[in-house]
Image 1 (cartoon, rainbow, N blue to C red):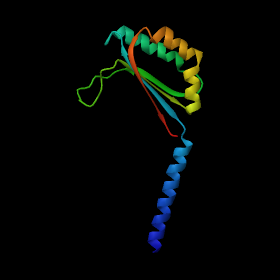
Image 2: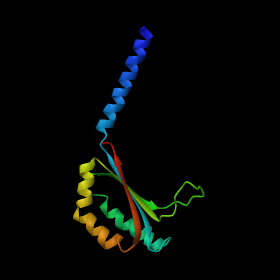
Image 3: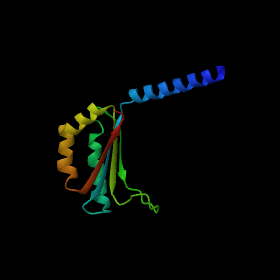
Image 4: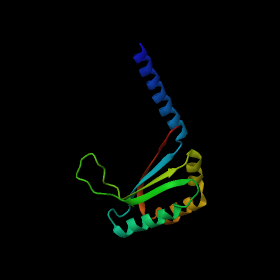
Length: 127
């Protein structure tokens, strides 16, 4: 009985720790996958990468990575896109401010829109 009680106590502590950590972690990830108007065009890829890097210093950005696709021969890997960006924010509020910032909107309109044929965006994080 004593051993069962100890096990139950340990499980409760672990569950509380996991729940507490998830509640504290409010980070949000913003992933943008882009297909260029000229697929595979190295100069266009580089323009996209350089333009996107203008946003690295916006408030609320914890980390940012932008790079070209890595080709794969694995059937489950989608390597049909050209460039992708991953941005991690401290929370949802920071993502919202980022999306509404004049610098972001200007960069999208002036620098990226002329290069891009299609984009897919994924946002995810703890509630």
